[in-house]
Length: 485
Image (cartoon, rainbow, N blue to C red; front, side):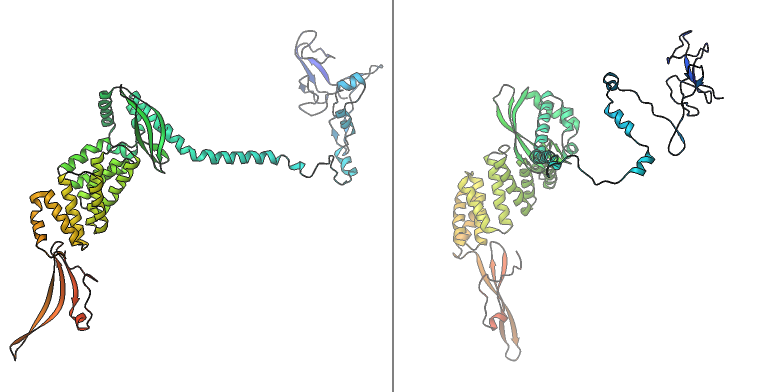
């Protein structure tokens, strides 16, 4: 005979009819003992943790008989655990079954549902307008569009924002005297050419002379893909506010400060001792470090001109004058005149004589050169005139040069005065003499006709014997071939 499920005290063995955690007699812990396997379960368990049987409470009728609650058998013939239902508060107070309870009671077993289930056509419980089901796409699409427009507006400004933040941070660190932190913001080339110790010493020496300083009103003056120039207002010590500029270059997506002050003096010293190759090396290094500052282009222009690299000097000098117009600091009118002269002279050495004449003339018209500078300009323009075949203009320039330059060009001026107005050129005929042994007479044949320019020391072929035999003498200065010069 199966034992009934009982709630017993672990301490005194009392069987309690009340579901509780503690015994009402001794206060010991209560357990629910399975009537099937005798396993002790916690009081709140409805099924045995050991055998899985229902822990049915004991029922006693009037005759005193005790019986277990029946086990439920499913449609498959196997026992199943019954579902315990708790009466809802609605049903208790008003006698009305709750909707969830009613629906649960009406549920059938899975087997019965499968047998009685008949497929029915799908019917929508709600009838919606055609576009109502896609209303949620409208706010999402609008939000995506706003994000796209916002990205178009903000993204181009990101480099500018980062540039301004870097420039402000760099100047703040300098003003506070935090030179180590400022040094960390320098470009790679700057750090390679200037050690931290030298950077700190130079800034301490410079700012100790001017005292405190402050800045304000920063704004982007020029901005290219990898270079930029910031304009700001500066006040040093008790002096008045003035405009100042600071350049930055971009390396690997980050804006950095190019530092070039330490290279100016070594270049000047190299030029002074006529070590032009060293000056060119340092000038190239300077220009690579800061391609925005016109002073870097100016040093490169002078070094290339002194080395005789006139094509490169022509580009660098023009770049210098272009940057001077944009970057209004660093050079005075005297320096600008010097770069203009380098351009004119480089054009002459590159055999661009017409352009050289225009540049020389502009220097005379737009500047007030001293006598030595004026002498160099007039002599250079006269040389270009000769090479263009404009000997009258060259002659007039030489007369002016005699008055300006003094004894330095007097011999050249006298030489021109004695020359034909067509210029210092001579025609030379190359002839071949053949002696006739019978008559003892010599017969000469013209082989070539040359034109020799004494000024330029150049020789040009004017005609040949074959052309003369055909009656096709070449015109002067046409199809000319330079043999020496």
